[in-house]
Image 1 (tube, rainbow, N blue to C red):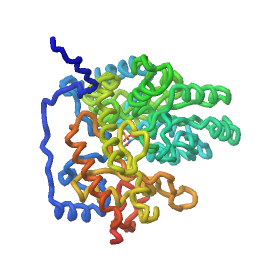
Image 2 (cartoon, rainbow, N blue to C red; image 1 turned 60 degrees about the vertical axis):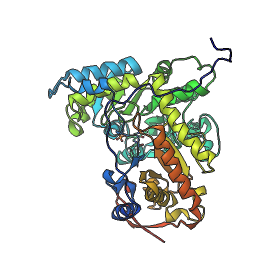
Image 3 (tube, helix red, strand yellow; image 1 turned 120 degrees about the horizontal axis):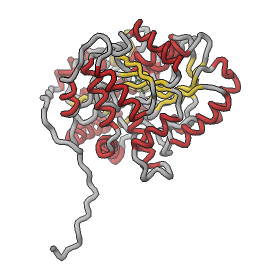
Image 4 (cartoon, rainbow, N blue to C red; image 1 turned 30 degrees about the horizontal axis):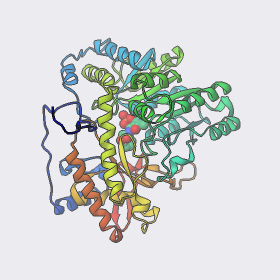
Length: 465
Ligand code: P71
């Protein structure tokens, strides 16, 4: 034994090693300038071959495990009653506790169906900050979304631990104003994507449930990133330090009437989603609409193999070693940027680091799309692809036609799960810091093409200088 003090190691590492690799391509600055111009300064319009490190989204971009890849071979490609559907249903029942499952091709398929089933024209749906596709489906069903998230969520510098929480005073005010007749459900998201991947506390979910019960209003959950939310609960909420993530996930689900889910995030697959329900009548109505829009209710637009991969991924999603590495990697990048002086949303979120474009480029007014421009500049710098989450994403007010003006003007650097290494994170941090150094010379953009729905996907821009 050595005489010296024992080495105390606090580091963690990814709980996996790499079996297959995929070559990615570096480009020259001239190539990137050409690619970005072709894309109309919209990172959604870039070809992936022109991207070196792709932090556009964590949606469907995850690396599957050997078990998931093996599961693909177990695909039972029957039109009806595929064995994989029953595996999926079992996984949802085991991990989340909902009895009924309606598979869909991805999250927005589930949002479409639940919105059509529950919302009637003139309804209002309170929720903890809008999400683009969620709100659109609520509006297409004749509803109007009302934001009831806590004020801290709109302040990038506020370091409150649960910036995804519902403001119960705001929620009660909406309940009092519209009543149970016009509020089909509360739309609760965990974690909150547009707030910066911020979590909701279990205590808050419990309080929302109690308020819903008082008014006879249902509570539906967007549980797309619930494992990451549960990880934060374990780190930050009193009384949960020793609680298994799986138990926290279950506790949140147990407080709700049903949920929609994009399997492309937590569940570590490339495609898939579903509705998870308790009410037999809502289930009947939903599975009936499923056959209209998605496919038979035992596949919902998915191949059998996709359902198998998702059912395995659901179980992997609540593995705490995985979550430590996943959230830890996001934190690593976030802290590298924060320590370099770059304005980021704090605390660092679960799936992404959000740059505060309003403080990064204060010289660019919001109607000249500072976050859109910043995403373009980061791509030009090093081939790193990110996503605007500001005024372009917020779209226009459905009634007045004016730009919605979100208080947050952000660029999202989103980390796919199990895909990139710490060295990739260093390259990303260096690229952003290089743009930070030359920020004073960066100008805005003009929008040259605006599509009708979800404009951020297909809009085109021209640089003002
Ligand atoms: C993300 C996405 C994918 C996306 C969607 C819209 C614009 C840009 C990128 C999708 C979500 C989500 C939440 C909380 C429902 C969906 C829809 N997120 N709820 O963050 O984050 O799921 O993509 O499977 O249809 O990049 P879907």
